[in-house]
Length: 206
Image 1: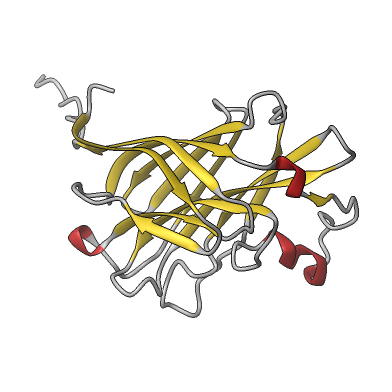
Image 2: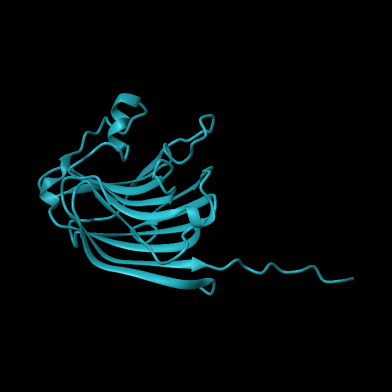
């Protein structure tokens, strides 16, 4: 936290399905972002298909952030270019297992992270060990260090670390919040800090 500098905040902003907004007022290329999300209607969550998380491409498409769901995908677009053609998505999606139980999927989707066509860009995903039905809220923290993106969901219960090879650099990178689900999502609090470059220890002269 000692490396945090310029700070911006967004509070109590409702993001309707298919809507996104940019978090402005700071440089996101080297930043620390903490976001809290509240789900207005868990009852709209889709029924979870136990076979869909297997490594079968036609079924795994439903875990892509471009595919619209009921509750999610919702989260952040990171290292986005001005025209949004380059962007990395870190997001949650909620599914229903029965009338009272839910599962939360957390994903890092870099499929649109770069204009380069020869880059390996796998999508990483994991289920979050978290009972979202209790509070209908979930937190996401993301550390961005130029090409490195480290995200943790629900207080660190799930963590995903990836590297992004995008062309947009410096002031040309943007941070956005998005909701590609049918159910409204509220950003209860989003705090973002620019991060200073750490001073490395120098070798002692012998």
